[in-house]
Amino acid sequence: MIGGASALGIGVLVALPAALPASAAPSPIKTIRGGHALYDVGVHPGITPAQARASARAGTTVPEYTASVKVGTRNFTYTIVGKNPAIKVTNPSTTVQAVIIPLLMKFSNGDNWNPAKADSCDPGVSALARTKKSPIFVSQSWAFGGTSVGTGQVTDAFQRAEFWKFTQPSGVNPGFHVKLSVKTIPAVTINVPNAQAAEATIGCGNGLLGAANINWLDTHLQSVVLPSLAGQGVGTTVFPIFLLHNFVEFIGNTGNCCVLGFHNSVSTAAGAQTYGLAEYDNSRSPLSGISDITALSHEVGEWQNDPDTVNPTPSWGHIGQVTNCQANLEVGDPLSGSTFADAVNGFTYHPQELAFFSWFYHQSPSLGVNGWFSDQGTFRTFAAPCP
Image 1: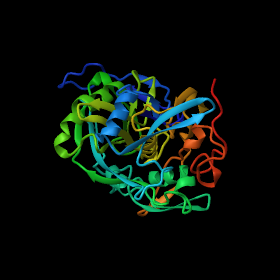
Image 2: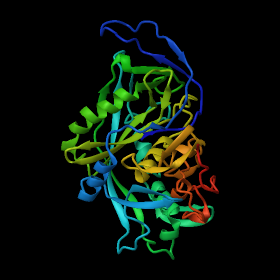
Image 3: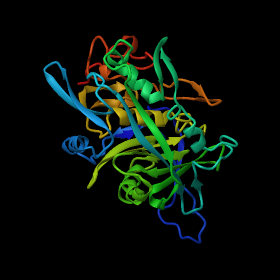
Image 4: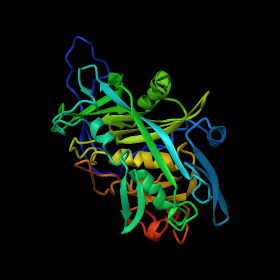
């Protein structure tokens, strides 16, 4: 599922010329007006439900479980990262190896964006350093609505909170966790063709917010980048996270901008390869409309709950970033734009609020903490049907 936020801002993108001789200066760049900030923009059909479940059973992807839930007369089969919190086990905790891969994005006119390099958007500290010290990877104590849900990373706390009936101290699996063990590998350079590139002016860093066509970029990640990383331990049993800095995506043309991150799964000979991509944003641009790890928290939370992008739900929509109807377990989409502050390591981060399992599957009472249907309590009842 390609990741997203709601319409958070209007901005100006400028498209690079379709062809630019290496020795020539850029020709005048056309200004494109209009921006629509998104995290998820839809399913990329990289894998079928059957392939995903076969990989999970064979242990050739990240640890996952498959179960079913009934809504009315319909049964919905879903696959989620970790162990089933509703089934008592001796060790309900799961640890997934995550690999952060900074992407150094380069344009032919010399403009570039490097998450590992500090710039004036956050003097002295790089986007990569901030990300590694963020609640995505740093464990801390969490309380939602005054209820302690334990100690863990932010998406682990979310996962415990959404299945609180089973993970609370009196539940069948109080030791339930989905943890990320993280390592970082050297940056990968991506040279973006002019026809797939765009940029907009911002007030810090190199003065530009970069963008690439998401259709080109995701194909490039699948066909070129992921295979090239096999020798560095990046394979189907780990979760690669591609990190960008003040760099977004557009969908087909610059009038359809901007995507802030996505997650996806592709079938390989070794099994289902799940992966995610998100930008760390400190551009202060209304074109993105987010801060620091907002997009990354959205994508990691969605990867945990819909790792293969094929989990069906009753139809819901007209909320968050979703302007029509949608029918999948994408926990970030209905609350895109709803964030909360979390201070850790001397910096205040802004993870996104995420919707609970019970919100999607019309469960009342909710399985979630405080009887809520989202981790900050914005949702107090389940999703309305979407015709």
